[in-house]
Image 1 (cartoon, rainbow, N blue to C red):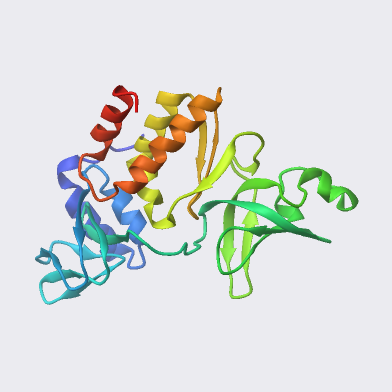
Image 2: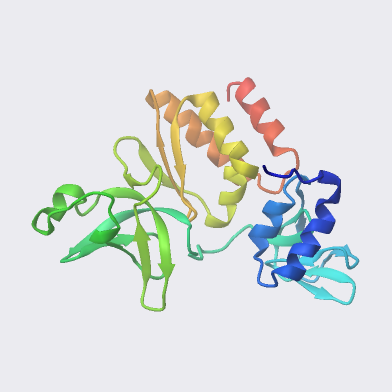
Length: 256
């Protein structure tokens, strides 16, 4: 039988976890303390975000004495005990388990080369496809120019390995693809998927958001697809605003 953790002792639980597991990632700590709402504000390099020893510096920040200071321009996020700065601008930095959207640019004897808008192309090995593929008929499964959603399996100096073994991954048919600045993807997705689910509910569209900034939308009508795209772009243009979820709901109510 699982024991329930008292929410009031979560901050203490986080620090105990850090002591017991010193290589805990920033994402894991935020997930552990996800009961505490995130706080965001625009910061510039050198600006003091928070004071005190109760918080941990995350990506885009550093500790200087008792202060946590921004090391880049962006949107500071205080989630639980981790403070980080989400860059408002910047290129996509591929990481393991990122879901990305790309296009096939070449076919080799054992897989597909995929443009994922990164310095290195992605490579999808035939072994990472969840069905049998005849090597003589690979283009019947994915041909040059086809779009797909894939997960980054590993990031190496020689390239990026992709996989299709996962829910919602595979060839993307119908709909259309457009791009936003990759660093704004977290705001478009929202905390625990809240923002993108709001857009799906309001438009009836299927939407996949790649961490590389490519977004695929397919809906019941062209009008619904356009509405969904405008909603995504509305969010991407206003990443610095607090209470963005309420503003998006108002945007839909006004029928913009």
